[in-house]
Image 1 (cartoon, rainbow, N blue to C red):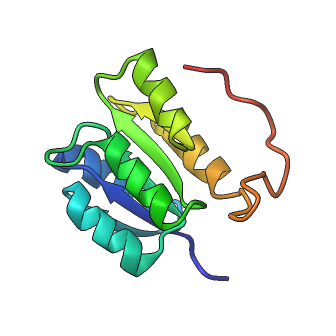
Image 2: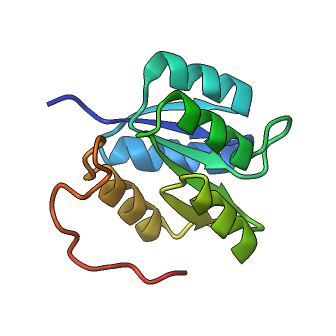
Length: 139
């Protein structure tokens, strides 16, 4: 069985490395970028199953990055991450097709749940292949 690919785009070294270690430990094939431009190029070339992207990146912010990813390939699951988000930002991210939204500092178990549940989804229909054990409440 082919390992699922996850791309992490974050300019904060500690956050990026934490995601890389967590995802590698969960058995995913992990790639990373420190800025949106490099990340978008990797999306084109690698065709990841999921992108985890910081909302506050230099040059191109996470919302614009999300829009561009969805224009390239609609079915790529995109999770936005931030340390200073608002409910308006969450709503905007969801309107533009974000799968989920995670806040920093990370709750490791929540991050695992978001990623593992997301990657159980069928990439064509964006529906769970198997029913989730429980619904998560909004954070």
